[in-house]
Image (cartoon, rainbow over all chains, first blue to last red; front, side):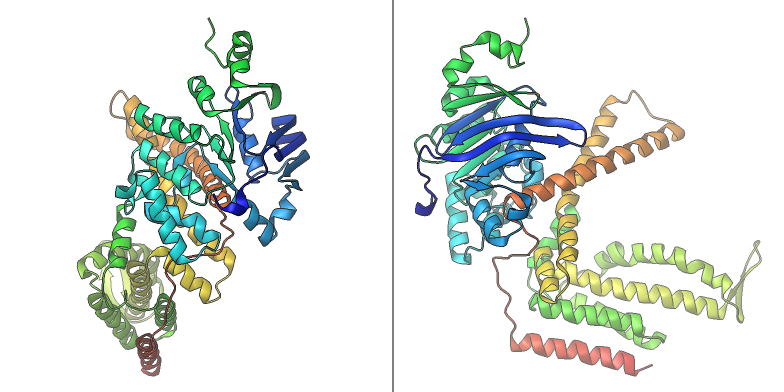
Length: 255
Length: 254
């Protein structure tokens, strides 16, 4: 992480107040208010359709609230502000989103180009980009894939390339939508180790998670959503230890 | 997908057109396309077509491959459009179609041949551009030639999401096959194909939005950025002058 990117721990990375968002007539978020402190690793839990992915897209300024207010790093996150080149540039440098479906995220001819895409958009110089791409390829053990087409990779490889393509810019805030979905056990362990290793680095992590077995290892706190509303929050121990809560919000199998 | 990967590999090879500054190459080839559209007699058109073959040979583009992937499809497509001219343009009788008793006129045949020749020549120059230039370089070259940003975004998006769309189409086809109990009748097959096309179109719309969001999430704002900077050398200017001379000669020959 760049020195200028290190946030002051404890200050809010995001503050949401009474946020509403709908897909046409279908409400996805309904009056959501929450605070995400900088440097924390937060697991978003909830059944399918609870609003986790929508929330991540709002935090990444891909969607904008229909009602309510979203503050990122103390500034209002609005479509109008993001149209300004300097604001968009500063925001994209600080925040990265790893999509649930790696296929939509991998759109370049080679893995090397895929990793270079983000830095190129941020205007880094060619030498720095080449160096950083090499480092990131090594970091994710994907050097052998550098000249391959991302569309021809296996599911696990695609996921690693998608993660690497976002992490190459060392974003201060990392948003992950189901980061361990469809992964084989070794690749899943690798991702979990990486996310677990983010503890204490100052990086803010917000992750939509279905696999409760990894939450304690990768998150400092949990937020539970249901029908676009915040229904519970607490430490992994508090949330995962409350079986009736997990069952009532569709996070455990029904007996 | 195979074709695109093949084109990217060929674009990276050494060759006459591959060695040019993409801006000069784009400008020169567009100039030749424009010339092919403007010429009004067959001799310069044949000359331009011959020049396209010469450029393809110098750039290690196989003539057989070019014929199969470009000339034949263009012939079939433009042929369908040009065919009515054979019979509808009034003039001297050249031949008569047996049984139907339709008359092919000399002027009609000339119009049809000219239309096909023009389409083949322009398609050849356009194909040479995309077969000898990596797609991002084509986009950056077009942008540096002041092509509006919205056109660049549309071209870039189309190229990027077509792979996702193809993948989805293949998956849908496989999913259908896996659930079919036996061969379908022609009617059932057509009905299934029509229904699949609708679903694919809907998915395509969704996917194109997703791909665009993924690009925005990584800082994309429509501009094309590349690791390699373009450099124009004296040889590029000489080649452009050569292209200009060919275009001027073709127009002057009329």
